[in-house]
Length: 93
Image 1: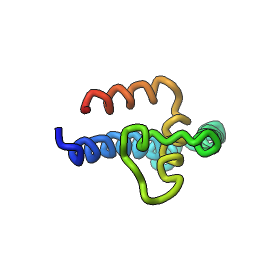
Image 2 (image 1 turned 135 degrees about the vertical axis):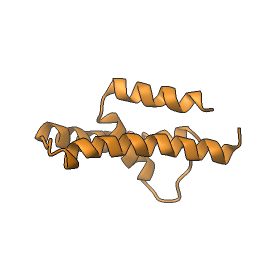
Image 3 (image 1 turned 90 degrees about the horizontal axis):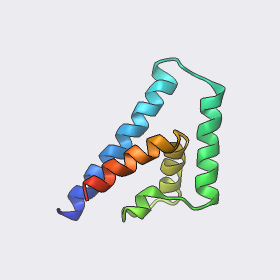
Image 4 (image 1 turned 90 degrees about the vertical axis):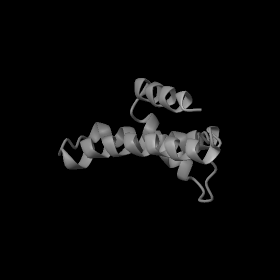
């Protein structure tokens, strides 16, 4: 499959998962401090340990820390969520 198509599909999956998460957080009025703490902790850990899911998928960013930020938000959802996303992303390659 063309590499650009894989990139577009990969980012589509990532963006969809992020929007779903923020929809729960802001639109549905389900604000909770535990969810906020989870997001902050996920971002801090991703930056501290240089975790960058898009980079691992060979999707390089020209803006520093964008991949760490996205990865931090995704890992704040928990292991089952990350497993499902990774399964979706690896199935398209």
